[in-house]
Image (tube, rainbow, N blue to C red; front, top):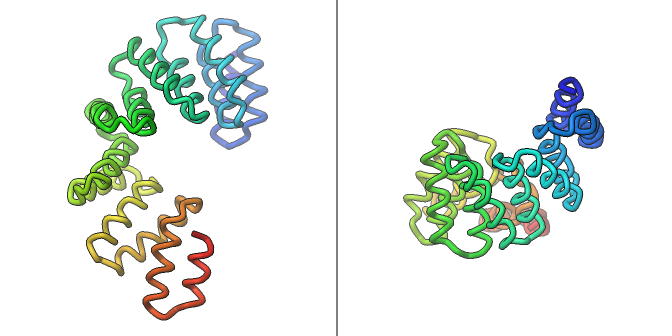
Length: 231
């Protein structure tokens, strides 16, 4: 059982999701009480976009070990990805009922509150995540976004710096940092930051738009057109 589970974990980290799904299913079939295999199977199915089967796997894990928070964290992430915000908030709260010190649950609950446009509750949850896991970068980035949207550029800048110090490949934090530099009028630094943001979050339109503006200002119209078309 352990061999199938560990194989599934290795395959998941390598991005071989179909193979990982098979290995975790084997582990779960051989040991009906293997909660970690069922949770990991749910994670793989969620990444594959099979939300319905992911929920089945997480729910089976919760029945095996009702006091374990991880299945509810997984359910919450499935609901969040599916845009079912109310259900996501409920699932994350169940995870926290089982472990109030679970920093990822506080973080994802903050994400859900943000999507529900409940900024006050989001701020509280994200700050709790930072207190519990000060070396975890994503809550700093989300808090940075909150402060930036509220016009507190200095606080947002500090939070983005903390996020990037912990994980310099955090794409949303890099984008936030670039936006701060743009607002501050540091165009040369913003130019570099937006180009790096494109490498990390190539699907986001803002870096292309800002680069297009800067290229146009410099009279580099062909590059401006190319960037703005991507935006």
